[in-house]
Image (tube, helix red, strand yellow):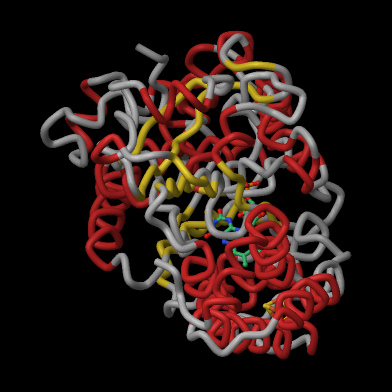
Length: 433
Ligand SMILES: Cc1cc2nc3c(=O)[nH]c(=O)nc-3n(C[C@H](O)[C@H](O)[C@H](O)COP(=O)(O)O)c2cc1C
Ligand code: SF4
């Protein structure tokens, strides 16, 4: 059984209650941090652990905290990104729903490290039942002297707020999130400046994913060396994977980074194999924004090595033969799947969610959806396939935020790996599935 850092106590009845959480050792990491570590020592510990952001980009967490402008006289903020709207990704909701105090404890530890006096959990509005659970847990933490003035008798004070979003995927992009938190339309900002310098209300800010923050109590309790001993290469610790699609056991799994992809898909401990013993066709390994890989390339790299669930191994081969860890949304497709139809679903999502600020994304997502509708509907031409590739190329890298790339990569990779299937749609003038 793999080490469990995030889901260890998830089945304990009543875990959302602070007394149950404390009974299992909860909030002892916070006590340890406040008593034994200076804020900079907490940051150092997180740096040494090798923890990388779990929101998608995999940026080293301690390094990001190190960018915060501590010379600034302005207030500093820690903001938890609980927007989780990426198709195929449904891991963060589990933490808030079943173990909210682990997230709150992580928020207090992170805020202490950054010297923040106010912190925010920006949560996807549709998760209204999770919002209620988190708000109740925040009130319990105040009543128990874990939030507010002089936490646990120390000279550190913090206020924590839970702020619901209004249901836009783009508000998961960190600068759009900050705009939304400030009460404005959630349009991404041009970077630089990055939030560590100019963030919430123009003040130094760190935005971190739920899973990133929820790992902090374990790191403080067990030490950075214990955390970095788990995993492989520069992929340390454990990772939540939300697995869905044509598998026998869809669900949320905590894996040790470095697990072979084949074991993840076929072993009974995880996905339990493909439904009805069907043939694996393709996998989107990191949420809808990452390149799709055909079965042979998700199980083995182009060099014939077993593909591992790690940042490096999944990216091995670049965008020609590799993909990305992304947010950990693992979508499995069997041989009955129409890749064009699947891509059309993704394209429709990105067209709908584009904020419209930049022309390549606003127009490109709309054109890609229209052309895919043509091909899937049997009215496509061979030229349409090349046109799609051309549009994806012009969207990628030419936009304010990575939503443009996220819309372009699935299109470019699906045509790269499954061109024949697109051509078959054109030749037959209908969907062959
Ligand atoms: C369109 C878009 C949507 C995103 N949605 C999320 C999200 O729902 N949750 C999240 O943590 N990060 C999301 N991100 C990534 C954030 O911008 C940011 O990198 C992340 O919150 C940083 O946290 P981390 O360092 O802990 O990963 C999104 C990025 C983009 C471009
Ligand atoms: S890439 Fe798309 S979502 Fe991002 S800022 Fe531009 S238009 Fe908006």
